[in-house]
Amino acid sequence: MADVAVELVLRSTRVITPEGTRAASVAVAGGKITAVLAYEAEVPAGARLEDFGDDVLLPGLVDTHVHVNDPGRTEWEGFWTATRAAAAGGITTILDMPLNSLPPTTTVDNLRVKQEVARTKAHVDVGFWGGALPDNVKDLRPLHDAGVYGFKCFLSPSGVDEFPELDQERLATSLAEITGFGGLMIVHAEDPHHLDSAPQTPGPKYADFLASRPRDAENTAIGNLIAQAKRLNARVHVLHLSSSDALPLIAAAKAEGVRITVESCPHYLTLTAEEVPDGASEFKCCPPIRESANQDLLWDALADGTIDCIVSDHSPSTADLKTDDFATAWGGISSLQLGLPAIWTEAQKRGRSLEDVVRWMSTAPAALAGLAAKGAIEAGRDADFAVLAPEETFTVDPAHLHHRNQVTAYAGKTLHGVVKSTWLRGTQIADHGTPTEPTGLLLERQN
Image (cartoon, rainbow, N blue to C red; front, side):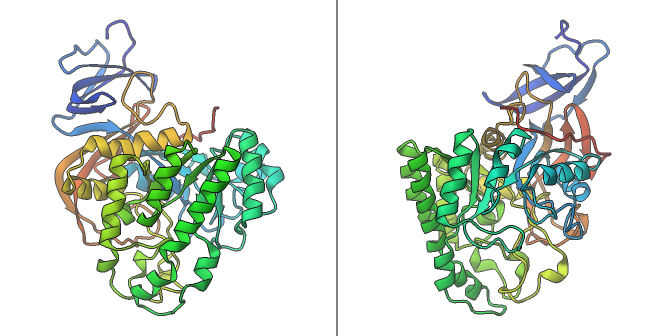
């Protein structure tokens, strides 16, 4: 350690590294991890020591699925509020989805607008996905060259007019273009024909809403996406998987060498259809929260690697859009600040470790997006950390959430795991749930 100009040493009896959990001292200089050393390693003169005792030091989480909605729908969310919530929840990097903002991230000019809005408001590092629309194939390569991390498309209506879906022909066209320059397509996979033929019963009953978004819509869309990816040797990613019925299709595709990855979200893994009260549209999302037996199979798929990662799909709105009619209420769940404790609460019930949680919520999302400096505590990575007291509990009070509208499906739930502090490139950005001033950078894809 004496040979390096170390500025900061973070010490804990439980540090989660790629090799496992151990007592260690983590040396930081210039915003980077320079070494992971023995717990008793000498602290060099001039370096500051932060000793976290038995609290767990883990890599900052990476959330690759966040709807910030800024600019244009900033009454729903914004970069200042979303990134404060992220910092309070142990997240150090987010990737912003291309829709629900005005303009959407579908041209380079629109990307620059979003970057300028975010530049002075980011409490965590922020990158951007581009969007693939029926009429913007010509914009895909320029967006790629401008540093977006990949391209999102919908296969069914997105819910906002400015971001129309792709049919199978246009999906093939966009996917061929993106594959030509080595890009990634991330897909909201619900088949519109199955949605159109499902019963559409307005009103407050969750069972009616669940019937309107059947598993077959996901299964068919994923099957079609696999066929396209296989034909083109394309790299694709399935967003927010909720249907366990699709898991055998995905596992078989992976075994055949199809370049497909999959995410699920805290709400699918911790909430169940059986517990959703009628009229409680804070639980509405698309695809929907399904039954507990379905949830068990999603956890099995995380364990065996069929599902790669867990990200929030934080998709907030103003409270007035969360009406008691599931058919017309805005579909989206706000969980940016709560994802880590929500998942840890359920994971430990199922015999999973914090190392598993780190793999699903930090290492794998970083790998998905090609964020080589993120996702692990090892030399050469950014000095991004969360400090967690995994045995402590708290009850979710919406008033203590930092995202813009304090609407959450987790209100009143008791969760395990209290985030004590969050660190970005060696600087503390949140202390016991209170974010500091914004120090986040805007990230661009480097390869």
